[in-house]
Image (cartoon, rainbow, N blue to C red; front, side, top):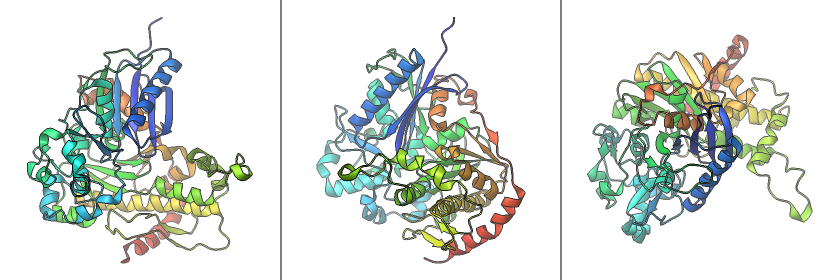
Amino acid sequence: MARQALLAGIDVGTTHVKVGFFDERGSCVASVRQATPRELPGLVAAVSGALAECAARAGHGPDAIGIAGMAETGVPLDRSGRPLTPLLWWNDPRATREAAMLGRDAEALYALTGRRADPKAPLAKWLWMRAHSPDVLESMRWWAHVPDAVAYALTGRLRTHETLAARTLAYDAGAGAYDPDLLALAGLRAEQLPPTAWAVEPVGPLTAQVSGVAAGVPVVIAGHDHAVGSWAAGVRRPGDVADSLGTAEAVMVLSESRPDPRTGLALGITTDPSLDGARTVVVGGLPTSGAMVDWLLGLLAPEGGSREGAHARPPDAQEKYDALPGLLGGVRLPTGIVVEPYLRGRVAPAPDRDRRVTVSGLGPEHTPGDLLAAAIEGTCMHARWMLDELTAVTGTAPERLVVLGGQVRIPLWMRVKAAVSPVPVEVVPAGDAVCAGAALIAGQAGGSLDDVPLLPREGRPHDLGLAAAYLPLYERFLASAREPG
């Protein structure tokens, strides 16, 4: 009997690192999901252990390994490839002052990089290190985004993908190269940033010892997580819109051109190269989508039957989510509650760093489940607002909204998403679409992105009555969200 070809995918996310083995159509054969470690050695150990565990479950190792992950989060490495700090996270606000005092004209910066100065950008982190930890910056031989660092640990070679490089705030998107003047602000040179490789171009062969995985299999950096997931989901041409869900949420519209810098800045949207480099992806982000529900669950979820007396401990993330079906069961939609889901400010389409969560319409008749459902409604209405603004600014006529990410496994979330969307919704049922996408891209190592198979999608029924019921709520949401904070 012929041996089944297997492809490994790695997705390093804000909350979880996922490792899975998939067949050539993207069906999961084995997977491991665990909390993302905060330091690089722990992350590498987690990935290596998960690869070994998947190989043991599947009966043999993969034929290729693909890596995707969050952007902006990274780590400085010394000349021996050792980390000089813990991972520096995208949502770490320490560089707020440096981003605000970058000293560059905002429109010129946007025209060059496709983004505004933001504390999550690596350039802002480097400036912070120059001011507060100059010894670290002086010892830094390389900066590595987390997918780059994992690939380096597996192959001994450091590369990145353009969708990650573009998030540094020091990358000239038009020239496809790091900008020396922006790097000079932090005293860095382009040689300290990893060179880019295409999503199907192997970084190198596996050289690290991983139990059950053969040395020499190709390792590729598939790209930024949202870009990898949307490509595998079939969002590859104008008219297709991706809604990638996770701790943060990104609505992505393919465009033949970049927006005017003044408009882009006013809307708080950013631009990225598409995964194949052929187009621009215009992005609107909600940093606290899944994070909003995580926060509420921490306040509302039962403390768990496993806790006893003096040995009580807070419920972990899985225990909180185990409580979600019970809390949402019996909730009637729409809830009538309007929630603005801005835990840490709003990015797009009306930037407001000081915006916070607001709730209106909550009364004594409502349950904790109603409030959770209303928060989900709020994220869906905000995503609709982003979609409307993005398609208007790009001149795109949306034909379908493809939804992917962990929240697709929450039926109420997808029901609301389909009812609020102005276009038909298709859901990628794979809960780890990014992980599967990275694996499928690795399967084309040395080939073409066009040949990457599509993950299965399921159309969501359009409930005309529910959609009509949400129209006045959406108008209330917009009126509230557009009011000055």
